[in-house]
Picture 1: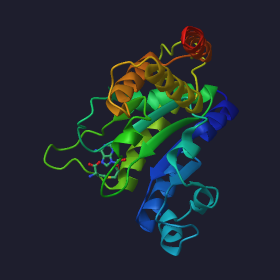
Picture 2: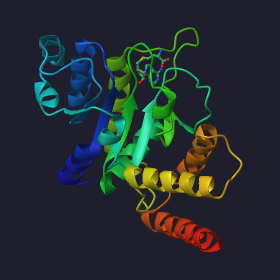
Picture 3: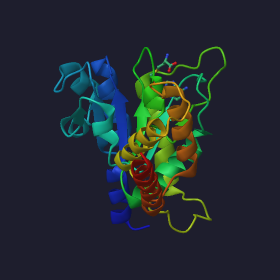
Length: 250
Ligand code: SAH
């Protein structure tokens, strides 16, 4: 792979920190990323505002990652343009979500970064990712640990994942699949979910209101399918046709 291809892929891989509380960790994540050639850091609803002396100290030579970090109020702003979102988690979740190993996650991030933005989400130091944030993810990844203590420091988790991405970039598998479909981005998927929910309610589909649990199951189903832009347009067209049909009848 040409150096320039590799660099443009690195630009598309975003590490997103949810509500980080410790400046030292934010600096540590920047350093971890820089050692592995990654550049795009985003902070969401951060309790650490940049510039921050402690963060800069811990970043050591990676101040550029901090000074170019994107700061967002909510997660959607940070990932709307992403076609692949993977969440990291220290523990097994009560919600059952598709899982990848760290090397599998890194390979997907690397491969799909050639086709647009991809994100790896990290949870808050104390509480990790909240369930609505997990629902935004196509997959979850857990770094294997001793069973007695699975919770790594945030910057350590970022270091391991950045290293895996680095390995994936430098030793691509012999049989790299040809081409990645044009997956729909997250913003389009969420417009579709809103439309789907609207139609289900119009049809008096028997569900609780608001239909949180059903929608979570449907999001998981569509996450498994990984719709392309074209497939999403077909489904949106079907929903609109259903709405027009219902409107004509009533
Ligand atoms: N009690 C929290 C721990 C948060 S640690 C929880 O159970 O999720 C802060 C963040 O570091 C996590 O949200 C995750 O993004 C990352 N992290 C820590 N340990 C990890 C592990 N073993 N595998 C993957 N990510 C991990």
